[in-house]
Image 1 (cartoon, helix red, strand yellow):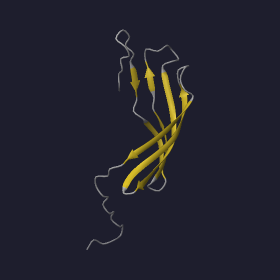
Image 2 (tube, rainbow, N blue to C red):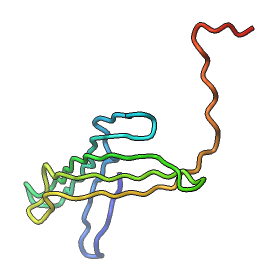
Image 3 (spheres, rainbow, N blue to C red):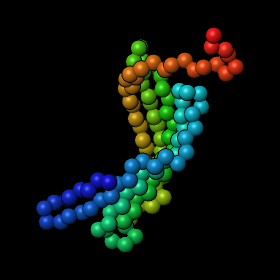
Image 4 (cartoon, rainbow, N blue to C red):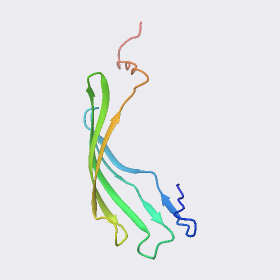
Length: 115
């Protein structure tokens, strides 16, 4: 939970939830589609203006640029609930540099003897 004070005279408390993953599908180890939400509540706002509830539909792909692994993500946000001056929709773009720390260990082959 994060608390934010907006000015010395007025304290505005905002509660942000961490992203809530509703569903994810890993297509082939490199591509993922997901549905998530990031719910925010402003407890000091007027009734009916407190909640921001975006549903985020996104796809991401892991690839290499040269030797550097990276992840690209693009998504659309639909706001199921938002204050009257809030957005109805949004776009998410993300680019992440990946720094793996260990190589994956080979998996054991079922039914193979380890003699």
